Amino acid sequence: MENSTTQLLFIGNHAKRTLTEVPTETLSNFDVQNIIYQRGSLLKNEPAKFVFNDISCDYNGEYEVENLSIAMGFTIDRLLKKRMDTILIGDPFELFFQASIFAWLNENPKNVKLSENNSVVQNLTVILLYPSTVEFENIRKEISRIIYVLKKHKVNTFLIENHFNQASAIDNILYYYNSDEILQLENKVKGLKHILGHVTTA
Figure 1 (cartoon, one colour):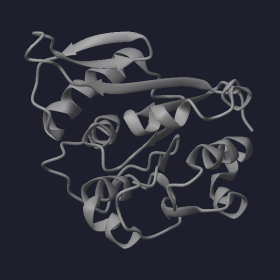
Figure 2 (cartoon, one colour):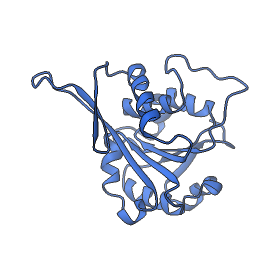
Figure 3 (cartoon, helix red, strand yellow):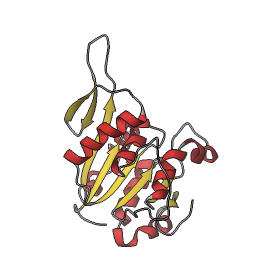
């Protein structure tokens, strides 16, 4: 287990619900942040918002991945520490989480291309929460865009393989987490699969 030099970011509604179920003593060893997209209301004349911990920022763009990723890029640059070791946790089926991945990696979601000289993002780990409404064999197809960009940057990416006890899985991941031994997590946490990264192929 590492200390608060590691930033832990829960992105989206599924991740925030999971965060509330992770033991506080585990979280106390990390710099914990959470951010969600909150829909607006036409009837109440309220705009949509990004809610970062307890800070709300109005969002007036469309709810689609390109506009969300641009706005998230500004949010990440202003409020987060990209040079820290960071773990991003979220549901890959949430558009807001997908946009956050593109923003973090400075990618245009409509123009992602692989090349032989792509940068390796060493200080980032991504944990994908298992979407409770989707069969496992359909996941790769449905989230192909973010899988593509994570592969491009060789980001170590893990999938929690079922939707039961996800908070328990996160608890165990954080207990065993060490950035120098990241590839050992799959062997130590039941139900965790290493799907992308520095030494794996998609």
